[in-house]
Length: 266
Image (cartoon, rainbow, N blue to C red; front, side, top):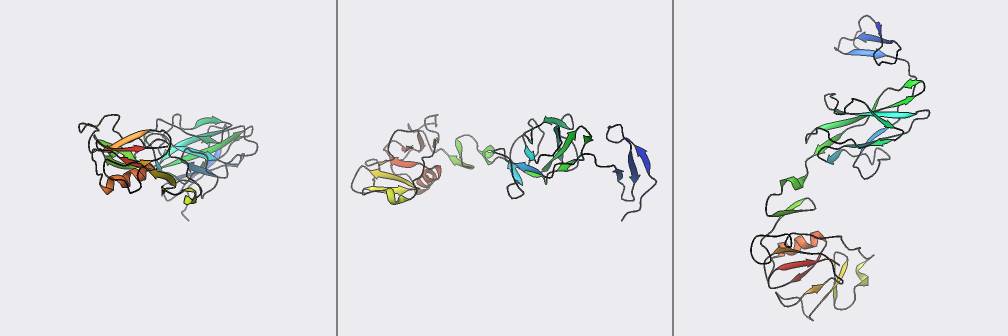
């Protein structure tokens, strides 16, 4: 344990009450105060899709540009909460340092200056009639760059992958009609046992063919059922296997045409 210097009294937290302040050989200044309000038992980082309810659902990484998401446990007797977002070196990213969250037990501060590869923390304190609690910190979340940011001209981002557009349906520059647009993925049946004769199960979707034989380039088609959105990713009567694989990745059923490879989602 580091030896400490002489103790002094000072109001370090602005509550009009003095705290005991001492210096230590490790170079830090320590404040000692009586707890008058319990701090939140836990503070979690979440992904914005809902609060984390335990350490098991707390997120450690997050794809984001300028927004973080946090939630905390309620404190009995608290009339409101204040939160802050801090960097690894203790710099406040929120302004003011501590933001009034009212009675809410979650927050999603935006317009933060975040850098990929760095860890950020939520600090939360409870406020009640007797005063303010000490801060409770989350274990932090590391910001990860959005993989779609690397997609350049002539590509589309599909589930975090940059997919090249080979050519438009007219053989020219890709247009809005040629871009990949898988649309909403159809609900998958409980099993492929629902697929009858003349159909094939593709990623849980029962599809039928226009011909008795397997589809041939530019002649036969695979039907996915009712109407839906369409997308074109290659100008080819005989699409390479990699294009078919990409379509399956999109969750689409596929069909061949002479002018282009078109995808239709039920």
